[in-house]
Length: 110
Length: 117
Image (cartoon, rainbow over all chains, first blue to last red; front, side):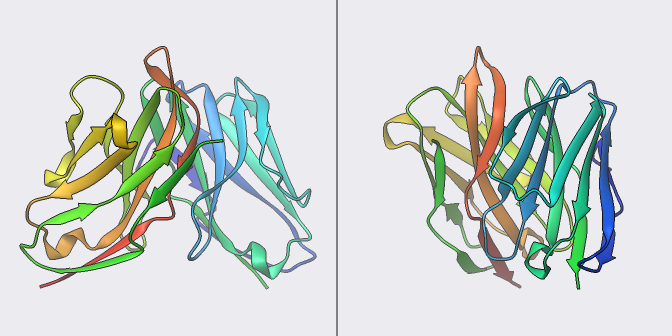
């Protein structure tokens, strides 16, 4: 348990499916992030939200659509993904003194 | 843009050997520096962090790291590794704004440590 909760922990979807990943924290952190962790690649920042506003989109394809309805919740909506999108998607939140990561959602696209 | 470089992709040691994992970053401003560990099948966990003050930082599980500003380095060390230290280690950096953590973390590519009993 890290304080940042991600659901589902595992997801298998076809290329035509629509699914969502959810992240929540009740730590009072004002910033939330989506990172992608693929095999043999560095952790890639996808999106940054500060006080519910998106402040960074790291050239992520539009088939990934983030949503931050409030400072405690962050979603990643998935639509028409490709097999190469299979990865571990990590949510993180931060405040003054550092970052906390969730345990990740392992996504497999068939 | 800031970047982080970890020198070794895979390090293999025997138990009780000493460990040093290299990390260099490129960013001209004031930074915060982090080392994270990811054990097999588990989430990222913070080992230690440097914000300011003593450049020798002690973390959990006997790890320490030294910030050398002139070399833009933040190497991770442990005097005597154990089999249970087998994991992947990530160095990360972000901007230090007013003494606090600010903005995205940029990660190195990770170093896999395998410790043989």
